[in-house]
Length: 257
Picture 1 (cartoon, rainbow, N blue to C red):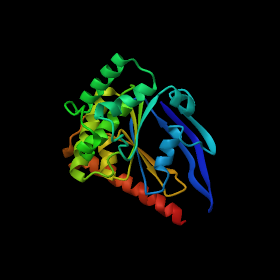
Picture 2: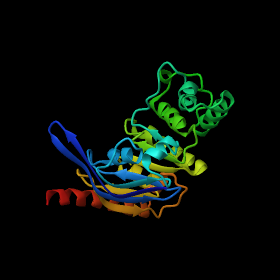
Picture 3: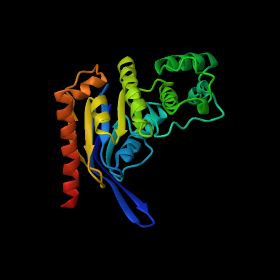
Picture 4: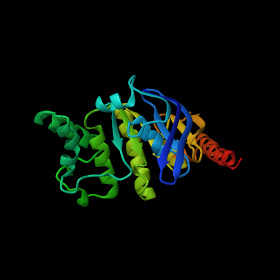
C-alpha cells in the first residue's frame, strides 16, 4: 500500500537548514497497522505528512497505493486524523462528518448513508445532533475518525490522535480503534510517543532516531490480531516493549557518536 524509498527531507528556515528525515525506507502492506515511535522532533509526523503529500521530500521516492502521494491525495486514497480533533464548533457531529462529503459532491442520500454508517462504526449513535463542545475529548476524537472514514479511504493516517487524553480514556479508545480496524480492514499508519500504545495497537512498529529522523528498527509483532488490555502483562508484550526501548536508546547513542 505504501512504499518509502531513501527519503530525505530538509527544511529551509531563517536559522538555516533543518535536516528532518535521513535515508528513510519503509514498506507498509495492505491491512497493516503501523506505528511510528520516537522522541519529540524525530520526524514521525513529518514522515506521515510526506505520505499524505503535505510535505515534499528533498530526495527519494514515495508511492501510495501504486501512485505518487499527490495523486493519492486527489484520488481520496487516505483519511487524515490530526492531533486535535479539529471539529467546527458551529457544526453538529453529523455536520462535521458530512463536510468532506459535501466538498467531494456526494448526493444528499449518499451523505446521509455514509454518515450514519461511520457514526455507528465509532459508536456515536445518539450524538449526531450534538455540537463538539457538548462532547468529551474522546468523543470528539471519535467524531474526527468518523470524518476521516466517511469517504471510505483505503488508508487511515493518524497523528497522535489520543496524545492529549488521560490514560483511562486513551486505553478505551485504543481498544475501540482495534475493533474499528478489525471491522474495516483499513491500512493504518499511527504516530505515537507511547511505547505501550505502539505495542498494543500495531502489527508493525517503526522505531525512529532523534533528528535527522532515521529508522533504527522495524518490529513485526507476533501478538494475535484480537487483543485485550490484559495482553500488556504477557511475556511477548513485555519483550516487544523492551526491544522498542532498546531501539530508541540506540538512536540516541548514534546521535551522540
